[in-house]
Length: 251
Ligand code: 13P
Image (cartoon, rainbow, N blue to C red):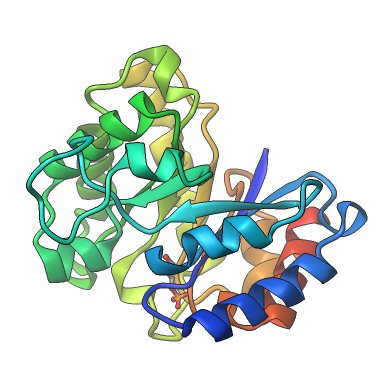
């Protein structure tokens, strides 16, 4: 299964968000998307209007960018997986490096969120990836596996079926510096092997994220163990995002 996920991050006013969605809805017909599952992750304030605006036969699914690990409670400013489920959200991005970096989210914290998302029938899009120092010192493979193994540690083999993994090297996010196709393939195949050895299954989609755009997507999407992309900047431009859908479909 191929996935293209657009992470809008903290961008777009409600009007801009709805205009972007409108363009995507019109362009992403059944024929255009083919076997690609297209997901957009707008800011949480836009989730309900976005869900309301999607037509019954829309090819677009909706993800949140984060959620808490409890269903309800005294957690000012947070939203829960349970609330997302009731807002017709299909998936949730968890453990994004920006949340780890700016909001001090730890691997254990991410694991709690992943477990709760699964309990609430949301697809967790679990993000992992190394810092530049880890790449330079050569520990990047094991360090990234460590993040992933902790994030998934509370899930049963059956629950793993509903997980999407996103490899996003931090040094490639929003920097314009994309990982090379060989670097991406090396990490994806390593994670797949580790998943099989340690958790008994390796059939979860593994997406790449980090400065992915139409000009570099062909090479990345054609790698054996790349099942799609988690797109930041280029997902804010409808034309680019739709081009990425086509490129993934044809990969
Ligand atoms: P960019 O595509 O802007 O580098 O962002 C990647 C990302 O963080 C998606 O979650």
